[in-house]
Image (cartoon, rainbow over all chains, first blue to last red; front, side):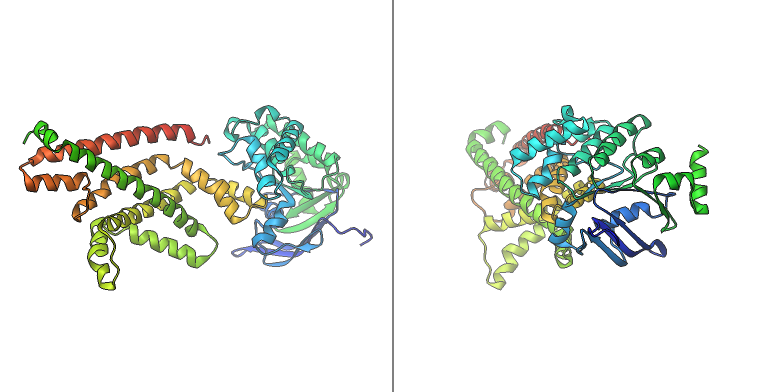
Length: 249
Length: 219
């Protein structure tokens, strides 16, 4: 590797099965500090599973996953500690239903990072301001629109000062008019130098923000390239077909 | 005897019996509630033997009749040189059985929590106990206020087991037997106790609904 820096996220020959289904086949990839990597591919290609193995929401059968050069621990306190360093944003927001938006943001910083409550609240308000939902801080998640919830969920992950952020189809559960507001928060985050791994179906967004695009199909990484090269001249037939189906819509 | 005559003669005893029933109910429910939470945590914890113990506990105490448990405590344990006072025997029975039901309610309350929230908690680096304390138990409790209200009423009715042992002061059901062995109180003696049980249950129900409306989780 010409880069002397350790990658923030590194997967080496990762394999995973769901029963007979080989959902991740010898997947290797690395994400450097400040890099934005977008994973695209048809549904069932294993891209979400790949994203979820990184903080061990899914276990793997073989291979290795390293975060800042350290292998991901199997379980317990060590795993919890590692997870606290990696932010994650889900398709279905997953805000804590019984808490105000503000409490959603301060829970982990106070309980996990042991940041004083007052400090955590101030920081949380700043983050909510940044994603544009500060006026919703006192409400519970169900009182917010999907787009607002997802932006709050991004702020919740940012409140942990993560080394990298994982996005697992963050806009797939949103009404079309709300997708833009979430993507613009993510674009801003990318421009500020956050290390990001994003699973998405938003091709225009991928093209704009990605440093690298990874195309997956059938549990394998088929193609990996810069966004311009990938979208203009996809090398593999599968990627060509995939892009064609999407464009025909 | 008429209700009026009974109240004149035994009014103070009814009051004492009502307070006794209330006391047994409050102690039983509070203890059952705490034990129910602990058992529930065991039933979902990562350690398999503890999970099995929790499930076993619930299967035993959910499925044993209160009277049978009380007889066991009062008449069988002395053979093992374990002798509890009568009121303690009653309390043990009226704690253990509702605690199993409390755990069952909490388990169903947990099912209302979307799995995604648990994943989010794990992704944020919360440990199992932090997750239990901050996410799971609070939501399980807030979505089970009405079943817990029913459990409180059921616990109160279970305390009538106290009438089966010579416990002093007597509870509402015990007092009825007492009056009916001494005087011909007849059905009227029952009616007064029943009315007091019902009145208490109505108050519990009303307060439960109030709390439920306050804490119910918007989804």
